[in-house]
Image (cartoon, rainbow, N blue to C red; front, top):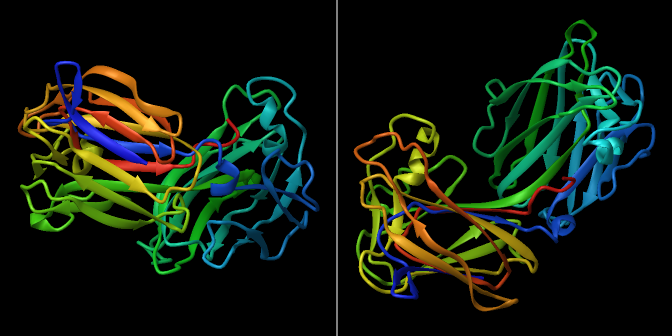
Length: 396
């Protein structure tokens, strides 16, 4: 897949000047190949959500239980999942109506604690790289329990100080209008295990886990290499080089999106890499490290971003276009060349957003574009800040 940002000049797409770029790639059709979907329950796998793999536990006081799942996400072909500290596993009443009736088989059964303590879920033998997990927490009969969700991964192995995600309250009922989910990312480094912790269950309140969706992601943050990868967005890998020049550069990143476990990212024909002012306040301060640095063109010409060795399938790119030095405002078009055709026009007249001197932007420019692997995207007047790639969200 090739990504060609270009600056607009007349009717020709040309990628130039500045807007921050976060690329979000979501592999939609190959979710079973590139995702691991687990449905917890009691005694046996039924009821099993369509597209999911079952993880059943003994109904009462289950001992630590490990199951092994064949997966392309695994370094040895199999992902080992261990649940420890559950007080029960239960299959409860089905969801009978409402927007989540199609997820009834997932949401009606769970592993849980109904006494104070910690339940852990360990993921072992994943390939190195970044992953996103979405966990489901609903009780059709005994919902409403509170718990703390935390994890250890390759970036934080201190079991006494795990990374916090949220204080979570499970939803409840057989006709819910909403359900509790938590989505977050973690890193596998050198074959490290990932351990999720759910601490709660006080007073009989159920801290429960119905299941999870696990998918690989590719997060790349572009910038100038004067300070190494700094500033580097959390859970992103850095792609940077000396400030000026049009020479091509390729970096290889570990990712489960790759057909062989890696994806090559190449930038060709930029005019500059830049680290600009940080965002110091407002809604986007949490993305400052991503949005304040980028690769760009500030002269007519074509800059190319190429992603190679992606697994075959359909993807979605979410791109962010912002400049923190008030050098944005440029207009650009986007076209796609992929398995479906050449130079398909998908966006026209896109305007780069701006802020200056650390000011808080009220909004930032984003685009969503779909493509088949081995595709190209052309745009213009844009800084390319980074990319986020994943396999989409099953079960929705």
